[in-house]
Length: 405
Ligand code: OVM
Image (cartoon, rainbow, N blue to C red):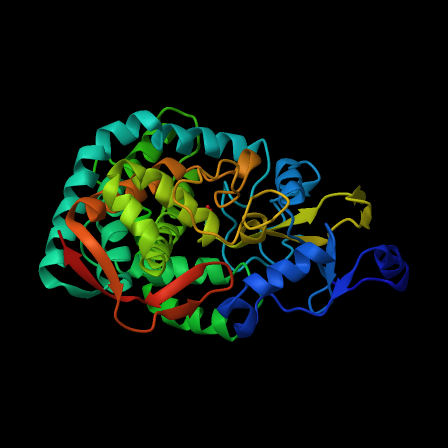
């Protein structure tokens, strides 16, 4: 985005920071930078990309709830689809505004409903039991490779109705999709290189023949049968499940176990009261948000928090910074599973708020509940290794020992 001197003059009212939110340094430890952005002002100009950054809870929430002014159809990454070619055909839900967004969302929200969660709950619970039993038996494990990646790759594709073969390709796809919301930096390039060989596999899995009748994927095609969406839209909405349904929960679980391993007194509370499983997962989402950021695009020139923004400006909303904003949370740097962090931004907010959050919460609850009942103590036995991603807070490895009751 190139701004004229005149446009830049408008921006003098806002603080400017020379921070690259997609640098290795930022992504390794974003929290000091989040604080800098929050404390500089409600809206900050990030000069390396010529974008706005919003890090305070009140303003992240307000921006995400104003879908008419902060639109998604021009992309929710750094690229502006009005002027740059999207790296893949835009999502019909994430990268869409009403009325298209509403039609897509209605179908996906019905499939991912609380009622549907009752139907899959027993199957999801059984897999959590089996997995944690197996890992307790093993003792020393990598909680990312053997737990956080394994569980979502089992239960979610099962519910979608995908065959077993090649499911690990979904990790490469999710990793690439979430990197593509950032710039074309080395992290993105490496993700694309790893994804390239599985591109055909992913696209093929969006076809009806690949999806077990009655599964979440087939239910999208049934919505097309009923005339709610077109047959062209159905595979694209299956693609949304494949894009957003795995890497998000993988990192939600990985981050939750990371938090509990680093805060043994909190894990003790969970063991004493396994019914805290759902609350513990929620607090981990606040404290280490899997999805750290999303962009919006300014539809028409406007004022936001006293700052003039121009049509087509990109605005980066820091969900994870909002989740540690001291204006919103008491002792935000304290991980406390009894906090009940209502209003956290980890699932976004407004019409684009995560449509799959009931699935994510179910997975989080069932894994943490099984852990609490079967594992007395989680010991870190090696250095956790980060996986840098332009959007996700992710781990590559988390070596732990599970001490059984
Ligand atoms: C989609 C999509 C992709 C990534 C994330 C997401 C968090 C949605 O393709 O619709 O939501």
